[in-house]
Image (cartoon, rainbow, N blue to C red; front, side, top):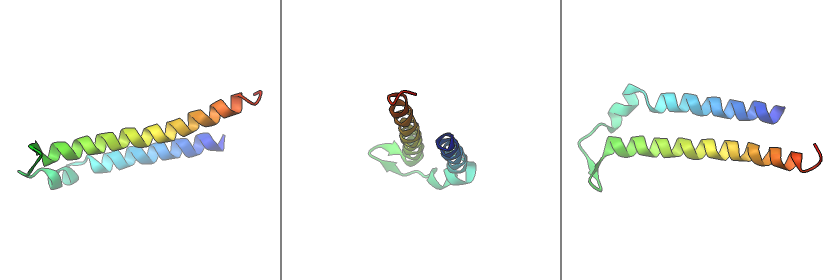
Length: 76
């Protein structure tokens, strides 16, 4: 049960991190007329944040899934 609570706490923390990283003041820091590899800096920032969140959520939920599968294999 504590694993579920820690997983939920981590997911809530990621949500608030996302809210922080995608607010207007932070986005204006990257809204510059700079191109990297022909792509505007703001688009690269948004893509990097999006990929980062998918990776973090995947790590958290994969660990929880592996713990559940290991628990069911022991006769639960």
